[in-house]
Image (cartoon, rainbow, N blue to C red; front, top):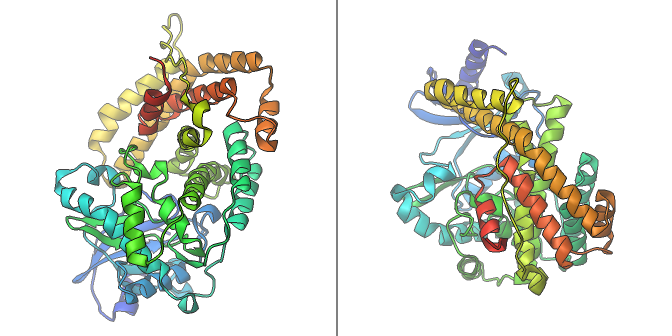
Length: 466
């Protein structure tokens, strides 16, 4: 569909649901959103956002559990229950010619965590967020299951874990730590909880924040019926702490204070081992979702640059899982490792691939990014990130691969034997030499993929002898 046709169809849809004749003003694709398109615009006096499924109209199964119509109806239901959600205005019909989606009021505020966390303009909001998040989740969990849309799935821990393992195996990835984590989760399944409605993706990035705190809770496509502790742990997933790895609740709060606030708001105490299970599950879940992003890109369903780059965030999850397992492993985790970042090699003779990539990064930084706006600026920054990964892999990848081979030789293990042993329980990270290998490999992989990820500095500080 051309831009002109899209705007014409959108104007007709607005006339239908709002009952007014006006013009579309300031239509723009909003940044972010690997699983959805969001379009901001004005229609007369109305400030609006259209959310719709991208491309073919299909959404990633990993990142959407309900239909877009049910998502819209669920958001409207949340508003009826005094939950801070954006007012719902209309749902796309086939005759609208715009695919699947819905129209809602545009709420003023900021969603980008790096613009919120640590920003003095949001200092009061950041102070209030722990209590606000606890109270909003308590209200979501209190909604009666009888009034929910019919396709909200009911998923217990065992079912979710089985599906997660299946998606991991289908990806074809071979990540020893993921094999171990799946086994650990199977060995520590909690007893079934009283089922409640869960938001499913309650975290910074999906919360619109203004100076006072939460202005709107967005992105309800992962809603399901399950264990409330899953929602509580999800916002504490390390990847959702963004620049604040040391503040486990969304990059702004403390877990004990958060769980206490939730218990006060809901009247239900949270069992800490149950919470810890869901924290490790949610961390692994995000890693498997990253693998799924690559599969979607390979399938041709969505060939956007952002999609494939997210696939390389798997190494973040490896480091985060190892940090989460530290208190579980006890004394075994207290030992330090010898971590050394190698020097990048000098080049002579013909042009090296690493030099070409360095030149491309410089061009993107100096000529493209300063002149780009909106989504083009976002994509240019994603491209810079991707080229940085390739440059580091070209120059450091062979060095790290040699180190990993040497460590496995010392352990007397082939990579397949390591994976199988961690999966069946015959091997464990409680073995100091094995834990050293897992830690060093995770640090090496992340140093290539995302050296500025806060979890990398946290892990080096905690584990390294130097």
